[in-house]
Length: 514
Image (tube, rainbow, N blue to C red; front, top):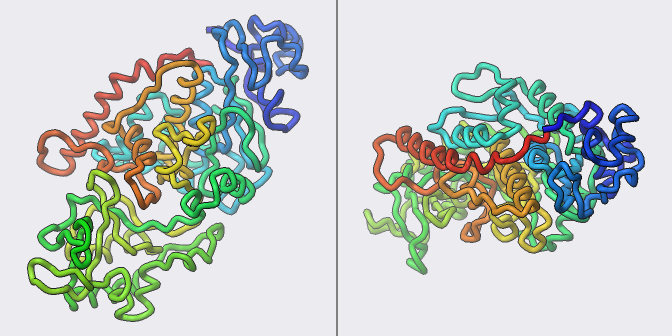
């Protein structure tokens, strides 16, 4: 492959505009492009007069440089240079797709932003567990094997942290920024984006999307309450196989409809002990960038409990119409669990939106008899978070069903966590590039963590959609019994990685453009 001279590296658009010529300079100043001679005479600088390059026709042009294989001159605008946006831009560019990467930093910052670097992390161990007995460890390994920029940079800046992948977070962000900015097919344009440009667009602006862009998206998607959520009010999720069904029972209130809820009964002494601990449990800190009025529309269960001893019993824990088949009478209080996915492997605690610290959630909620050994797949969270009602809006490729030229990536899609955001950006980058290049989609299956996330986010059977971490509950179970949870999870990981090995050559079958 021809090596581009230093001047061929990506640099900020000098005009500071979006689209048009700013998104496209000569991508091969050292190659066969007629304008390349002018670029060489300028020491490899980007074309200042884009008409010099007869093969360049802007991001909507029809021709590519001869040495890039000809065909359509595809171009993608990626909005947001967090983990998802950086990963997406990288995967597109590596496959020969020119990218304009829009990032509002450093021109506009939020209290969550500390530096002008891309892919900022909030703490040094944000990439969580590394072992394959953990779903997030599997997700990282899949991304690692398939050429993820984010995981590679994390590995290169890792610090000792036991069983977790921890990084020097400032070094990590600097490295991601350097790699992205040095890619010859990525043009970085700073400044806030308030509207979507024409052509292929990936919105990866994160949970702190600026008000102007959020308003534009809301206008585009429609004003329905389900289209765009501005606050994350999620209850905890538990795995079905960790619920003690010797204590819990399936039933619907007054036996109406089908018995879809798991009911977790509590006697008076159990309820009072639970209520006392809940009212005194430690809440999570409310950061400055979060809206302190978030609780007005969705009251946390601990706030409700502090209003009185019986408030919960007349609210989410009311026992009316629910007879315990073991006693033949209504319990003193009942916690209901509602199925969260079509497979019935995940259940959420109904009415348990909470602002408690995660260790406190596990301690207090495990006092519910049927949940004494519950495995929490996701803890409840209440903070400012812009995310889509993705099952109604997106397909498995994170594309907007109504306008397939627009894709979303990162936490805005409802994937929760940095690694999950990276995975969504990876999938969008790979599948968008393949579509623009006329190649068949990879269609990562649900047996892989990457595929399971995309298929969960786009699963129309998920009626009460809330942000989700990767977990084994959204992947198909094994076809045989395995003793021990760690052993079972390890086999699920091995099954996934065997599939990754089968598709790896196809995913990585591209000419490295960096």
